[in-house]
Length: 202
Ligand code: ADP
Ligand code: 5GP
Image (cartoon, rainbow, N blue to C red; front, top):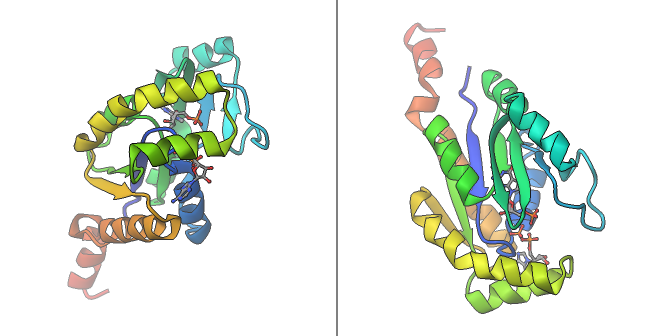
């Protein structure tokens, strides 16, 4: 059986992570998305169980206490966390899963899954980041200001990721992400069973 890959994508708010991941996953139906739990309110158009599991703080804290989260962090004033079960199930079946999480969460996941594929998405410039965050039109001015203020700190963590993609054009960023994942699949360590099979002449 081929080994499944854990793909972790981070970047400052507004860099285009959601846009790039959606397009990438749309082109790779075989790769699952890890739906996070959060205490933040849904944005217009967001659906419970699709974009996030939208929980109260008490519900979120219950998940922490029950050990149901691979990692969790407080980001921009809300809790966000990654349910563990789906990840374990996918990887056990040799299937891939993509997590879009913040840098605190990603660094914790790195400790547990050092063989994961860690990808940082950068905007082309700070001005463009601001433009995209405001242009998205989903957040209040206070929320936008808070996210911009946190951007430099988030970007400082980029050096701890194996890959960095500058999201100039969505299609270029998606192509690069696809190339990274294809290279990961081609790693010899992920094809050892196939090699053994061939040696045995199966
Ligand atoms: P994130 O998930 O990183 O917070 P989003 O995917 O929500 O960011 O993107 C923020 C805004 O920028 C959205 O309005 C999106 O349409 C836009 N956007 C994303 N990628 C690009 C790009 N390469 N060029 C121009 N606009 C982009
Ligand atoms: P947003 O509110 O824009 O959807 O997400 C805000 C931030 O929370 C982003 O940096 C996003 O990557 C991060 N995030 C989303 N889900 C998780 C999660 O499960 N764990 C962690 N640590 N961060 C998350």
